[in-house]
Length: 478
Length: 126
Image (cartoon, rainbow over the protein chains, first blue to last red):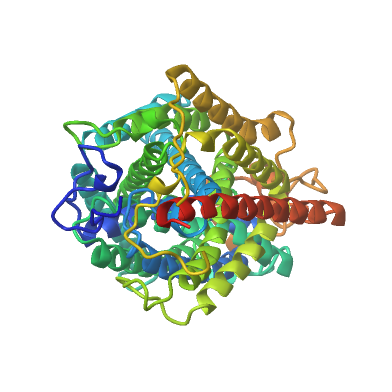
């Protein structure tokens, strides 16, 4: 089983699993950056501002930086493991090789749900944006957003169905425009180009920490939204030309981009919008950067940020479909899910069945649940995934010390990033508990039930030794 | 050397049932708390103000000007400004949450380890 080099630059993926047709190796580091940042950048355009609602503007900034620290640890750890476990499924495949099948099944589900829910949140935002544009252009009645939500999900699923290179090249272009829009908004409203309209001191007066320090803790919940999804770069592992180089480079460049974008976003929005309005992402600022542009009085900025918001939602939903389908596909290939999902399209070379299957799931959530609940569902799945990562890297280093497997990237200061990540995950669990405790328990209850279902039923269909596909030596201690 | 485990072939109907089970559980995890009105995040206004003004809502002139630019009046912004989360919680709820999370990871790591030993034994031989 280990006679095929999965990191080969000349052959397509899938070889280790014995299938005839594999995913195409056509992507470079820029596509990896576009996949990671493309998924996440929408977090600056919508959703992060719920953190303001949970703790106030300063709390959201502190959450922004601590969540940034959390994701820096995620990116460092992920880059090391992924540069070695270069396979579709990302963290799912890592868990399968390092911790065990049940953990892998859970991690696979975290990925599928985190990305599918994020896709649903994106579609909701796109629908909202169309309704705002309609009212701004003179449409009197309230626009029905549902056709636009359905259209967004169907169009992007079709794009993903057709091929990964076109999908991620599309992402690269629209992500770059959306990132550029944030920079231009910052330059235009801060006084660097023209007159500034920000007034942090006046807007914060009397509302510095409206909930006190517990609000800072609570804000960590939605602080994750600034960066959620950057770990999705690993899903492209079987489709990049040089996994050991492109994945760490694209991931680390991505987190640096996001740290800049998140801080600028907070600075612009909190200096223009009152915190209560900014913090209410349902009845207040659904798309805060767009709202900030509206208050700038510049028609050009309104259009730019309107397109920026639309592009960010499309890029994110696009990347989410890509990642969720790869995780679903990888689990189907190993029979963790029915093998039907593990098929590759004979012409387009995409996991087309997984892509199609996830369309109605995303639609159910996008059309049937409020935005903050969908985001919370996504964040919780992501958070469970981040809690897995420190365990993963500690066991990886213990079972295969540095001298036993050559890594494409070795992250420094081990185990400090792992311990930091675990601590921040614990804090974030508490933050979610503050206000969304029922969802947290419901979600964990769901994962306990499906874990028992997998262990006592589903696992019988899985090949034991054959699922270990990496050409590694026997792990220490076994 | 341990004999290789040969998994049974799963029929199409059985595959379909497995998918349905997962989908139903997934939808239930999100929608059941919503249907039962147990989903958190309910912000509420503790002390409504009868005839709100910007001053009564605790807004400075600069803050009020922003609300007006956004198209709000003190009446339309009343709930937006005054609604707050309630972060008080019973200790029992926190202990329950911690216990559920620890139980989950205990199950996960214990079952995973047992399965992993089988994988390694079959892959590398005992």
